[in-house]
Each structure stands twice: as structure tokens, then as C-alpha cells.
Image (tube, rainbow, N blue to C red; front, side):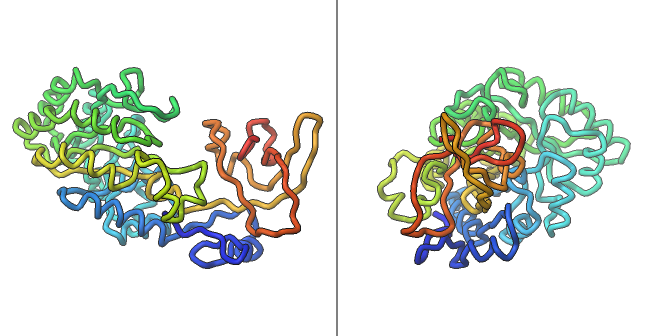
Length: 365
């Protein structure tokens, strides 16, 4: 659910008319619903309440400073993938001690910065990275907290660009090599082994891939807890959201009539809790899109309409530089007017931006 809906013919966010905001601030304009973010976070926390857990917001989903401050106030941790994201969290009132630092391309400068600020844990993607972090930590006179990202080789039904848990993906360490990699980490004097992490992909709409990944990794988690005293198991993020009927899905009635298999926080928790509750370690979750994806809109203004022999175009002042997902993944987004009027006509058209590429579209009808 979310807090965007039509009231008396006007699209509103938390009862505020979006047409007024667009006139006042101009377009293109991003508008976010803070209450939707709060509701999404609290709903997930409630579903996971039986577990000893921490929800770490994936900053890559939206690094707006107000949103980061909002999550910090809600008690969230943070999943970061760059020194820049860590800097933004600190500027927004968050703490490095509640950040897990993932990503396959951490620079030496970023590792040094994160160690000095006291990051909670590095999510390490290779044995070469273990050596790099160990060397930097040694020079600083510190022991760096680390967890290895383990790739369980799980198939997910999502766009190939956002599948991250297969053997042919660039992320993590193969499960078959995990024990050897942990032994390597344990032999390095300036590292402290803290946990295990995995992340299998994004925009996943059913529970089965998550269940399969956890089942594959559970015995490793137990073994590492006994051998190295690990403190946590991070299962990553990846929960998908509704795009095709994004506006309609804000209403409770829509969910009553929706596919009963459609992923929700409650169904996600019900599937995972039986597998995680007996592991004896803290469980970290790294949601991003599922917390903020339905909490924001992009308002754009029509510049003009244009009719070609093959189709009709509506040209707007926002482009792929403002919302790249339709162009990058060829996944149209829902487009709606800010005002409903009985005097307006209807028709089919491509809604396109002003960027000089044919891939600059929003709905591509």
C-alpha cells in the first residue's frame, strides 16, 4: 500500500495536490511520501519480529538525504556500496557502525575511510579483497570486521541484469569455495570474521529463490558459527514491487483481489522464518526497492504531442536521465495524469523524453 491516490479528480500525495506542487516547484519533480516509507519499514519489521534481526536499508535504491535521515530515525541499519554512500549517511545523521559495506569495486581510499569511520562490517567479494582490507587495516593498527558474500548459484525469474546469485555472475565467492575462503580470512592477522552474506538478485516476486538460497547456505552458517563464532547471516534483499498497476496497488482492496502468491512482507517472512530461526545468529535483511519503490513519483510536463505515420508521441520534459529504468531494462512504468477531466480526449501514444536517443521512453505503447 501507499499514500498516492486521486481525490476529487486530483492526484494527491498524503492529501497534497501534486498539480499544486508541480506549479510551485516546476518540473521534472520528484515527490516522496514519507508516510509510505514509514509504513513499509514498520510492516517489514513487524513481519520479522520473531527473529533477532536488523533491517539494513539498501542506499542504492534512493540516497536522498531526507530519506536517509528518515531511516536513521526509524532505527534502520544501512547497506552501502561506496564511500560516497557512507558519507551521505553520516551527513544525514546515520552512523557508520550500522553500515555494512558491500560492492565488488571498493577502492583503497574507500576502505581506509570506512575503517576510520568505524563501519560495522565489510562484505567481501573475493580473496584478493581480503588481502587488500587486511593490508589497509594493518597500516591503521585496526582489525577490520569482514563477512564473505557467498554465491549460492540460484536461478531467479527477473531481468538478467539484476540477477546476482548465479555462478556466472560477477558477485561473491562460489559456495564450493567458501570454506577455503574463510580459512584464508582467518589466517590474516588484521581481519575479524563477523558473518556471512548473500544476495541473489532484485525485483523477485516469489519466495522460492530466497528459500532455496537459505537452504543451500544454512549448513555453512552453522559450521562457521561453531568454527569462527560468526555473529550474523545477511540474506540480502531483492523483494519486488508492483509496477504495472502501481497506483491501484495503493488501495487495500487491490491486494484482496490480487494474485495470492504475490510477494508481501508477511509471505516473505512466513517462508523464511522457519529456516532462519534455528541458526543461532542475528539475521540481516537488505531491502531497498521494497521500502521506497512505491513511495515516490516523477512529475513531468507535456511539451507537445507529435503524430508520425507509424505512431503518436507525447513529448515530456523528463527523460531517461531522470528515470532510467524503462530505457535500461525495457520495463515501462505506469503513466497517469495529475488531473482527471471529462473534457479530455483519449488515445494511445508513446510517452517519450527529450534526450537524443530512441530509448528515451516511459511507457512505449
